[in-house]
Length: 427
Image (spheres, rainbow, N blue to C red):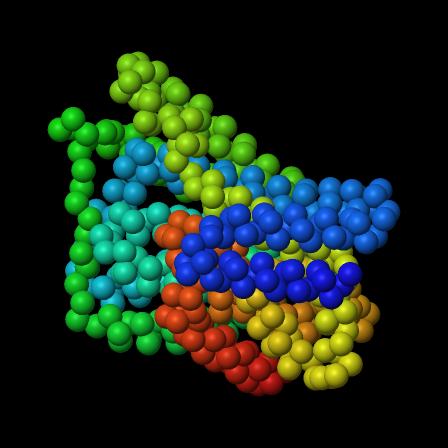
């Protein structure tokens, strides 16, 4: 059974990677792969109660991420419908593509540390659509946004789901992880940024035309500012809501979505129905990319099988037995997280090593947070941020591998060297 599951997963993964030449949508492949994996698992195990319980657990985790993603994408669409991003784009005066790249990456880096890498990626790529007209330029920016978002998310407890897992589990503490990983995460972003900045040197920003509807701007200055700051405020408050209530992030984003919906109804209550139709949250829901969300569901459910069958856990134990060295093992785990979801990998590692053996803020846990958080940038489907970017900008797997993967890999190893040197100097 395990051999069949691994083979099907590899074939599904290959079909997702070859989406463009095969002309088969990656969402269809992900759903078929998930369906086949769960079917074979259910028929092989025979314990229907166990399988249904495990599927329910996986579905609960997947639904939380999907609801969060839908909420964040809807908020971005509402802000966009009100021309809210105009408030930001009108203040960016640079005409040089390389200067814009540096500005965008540093904003992404620090924003993802406050929000999380998934939400930040959605916001920044939506912003780039307002700043850049050429798709080739937007694709390069989207790739660098993924690297910057994952690097920024790795050095705070709320920036990346794996760092949050380690934080909640007691493996890391807030100040220690921020001091320990800040420089390594910065190097992870800056090294690829130096290369891309040099490649873009001398090129000019080509902005998209600004459209008007019926000869008039769609919204007033007050409406644009209100929706922008409410939207960003809701996204920023989600981590605070999580820490205060201990409820999962999707509850915070849905709560905020309701507040934004109410605010929109009150602001536009005196407008005619046809005048406010495109500004409503109902309309925003029709504009979110459901294909990307369906792909997300399929890939998460497929990876869940690897977790339930202990394939990932056994892989980690095998590495521990064969390799032995912690730094090499964690580096490999980071590289593997570019292929499969880093959440089950980190969960397996947390189960492998006890806090009694490796106390909080030890080398293992901090290095794990860095490698698992940034290793996903090496492939487009290696992180939630990459999957979101793939859907929002229709990035092809092999385009990302050709143009971005090498840069992400260089940044990954430069960050590793930085962290190891820093750890040895400090400790």
